[in-house]
Image 1 (tube, helix red, strand yellow):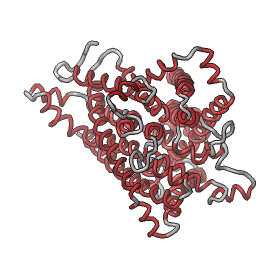
Image 2 (tube, chains in turn yellow, orange):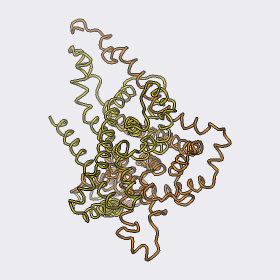
Image 3 (cartoon, each protein chain N blue to C red):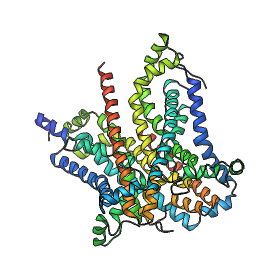
Image 4 (cartoon, helix red, strand yellow):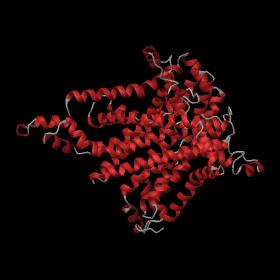
Length: 272
Length: 289
């Protein structure tokens, strides 16, 4: 590696070396160890573990609910970001500060709070029960918990982009006779989409791996409301290290493929 | 609207959007705020205080709760400073130099954010657990990592690695290195330059990163849950204590401890807001100069 700028500033070797050693010891080697451990399995064994109906059901549930939650946040997050950036209204500052509550609040606390709200005897759960459906202990409840913990992602990625779009651009479009929807479709959407996708991807990745806020509201019934991270936990409790590792590898690989696809999509949008 | 009869009023209407749409969006924001953020917050408090202040405080002052609080503070106290030093070093080499593989390094720094916390716990069990790679060696020398403090600290570090680096990298890239170069040319040593030029410049970004890092370290549940073993009074952190109480149907106590964590979360939000406003003020004065 060669340094090309700022030859007078010292510390390149020290900081890069420290960064690499720290990252390797705490993140890369441990993660690599999981893949080494998984390599002790033959393909047939690996396949038997990950194609078990209970694992497939959990896989579908985890990725499905995380996807829907990220989509919901795509809508609510955009709405919140829009209102916070474009309008001034009473309480705007408080709402803006509180958007980050899901990041600051321990996930277990979020989990029991949401369960207390949405369980059949909870405040919102009672209304749902009266209308004839259940929220807690169903995939709907899981989606809701994931929506809560990933709420800040879309808002926080869209906010600065929205604030940077010059209003003149929209005015020009409006003066040229564009209807509000056309302004949105042709002026705002192309500018916002890359940031929106970033927020979506972050929310999705976090949602797939999320554990603390989900296990309380999920009910954790095998085949029905059991998420992948919980299944890893279950296997570990049974000292089934191979099973836990195989599911861990599966989860990481699927997440990375999806994130890579989102990344590619983003590049295509940015360079038309 | 035709272009021939365009008035100033039309332009400002286009600027603000239609009033009906604006009111609708603002109401939507209020609704989303109330439903998603305010309601869960109020529910924690109301459940905690259901049986009065007496039970609330006795749940907090119980020995297991106190030892959980101590363990959480200890884990935060070890992992946050380590990630702080790492964050500064990582941001320094990424923002001050050009080298091959830099974008890969930045991706690797962010990697823990896209790994499930449960996997973060699992990898340390595979390394240091009884049947792990180093299991035999550790047993021989009677060193306990999993189901003990070191495991909890390792798992906490893993999930909070990116926070400080992530806040500092864009800030330091924006600031450039002219001031540091000037300090060097005027004869400052490397450490003098860092303490007197760099640190004052990145102070608020650093605080911001530390605040976010602390929030996550304090509340981490999944990763710590895998490596802790849930031994009451010994390896139970506050979030795990909440889980145990909840699963024992001791809801009032669970929500009492949860409201303590909620209080800490609100303090964190205040600190975050404060450091953020200081960063913005610095940016504004920098622009004016």
